[in-house]
Image (cartoon, rainbow, N blue to C red; front, side):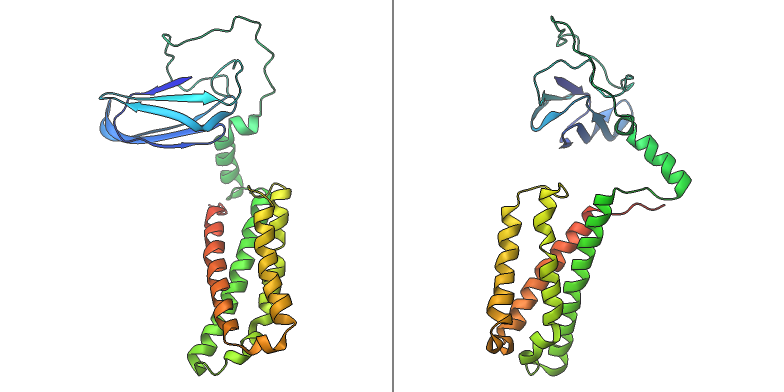
Length: 255
């Protein structure tokens, strides 16, 4: 399948399983301008396996289907975009009988239009329960580790190295709560809340909890060592940065 865009250089492309986004600046019918489009496909494509060739007058994309089968049309909706043209030099027909079309998903075909209507009626967009859960999970982790970092920072700024033996006593319970809560990250891939495997988050959480509960909690002499201050600082900084990125990636939509 070929998609030919009549615009000029350096395109910015983002391909997902069923969507292809393109933007570029160049000279066209409206002069020098930014040209962009978003094309939703009838079925899935290889989002990593696309190529393009830039010429003086156009950018030519070659996008591969995920499965080698006949599509009754290019886009989910029966009406194709008005700006989309057919290259009859590359047109192919199916020799065998066309299989019945799969049931259409109206919510997917007209997701943007439904979102606009919902926002006008309610004043905000309803988010999926999965998305809301991930937002609040990452926000709770962010607040928990930020609290630990602030308490340690205030103690260090006020008393210098003197409160270091009491750092675990001050923020140990908060750190244990945050670390136990991270076991949910092992369950997220299992239930499809996040992508990726289970082993990586499992070993990461287990490694930290082994240090926290087996090497620090059970050994009282370790709780007064200065290394606790530095260890908790590193863990908190990592989780604050990671939690902040996740929260930005799942924003709630309000009017």
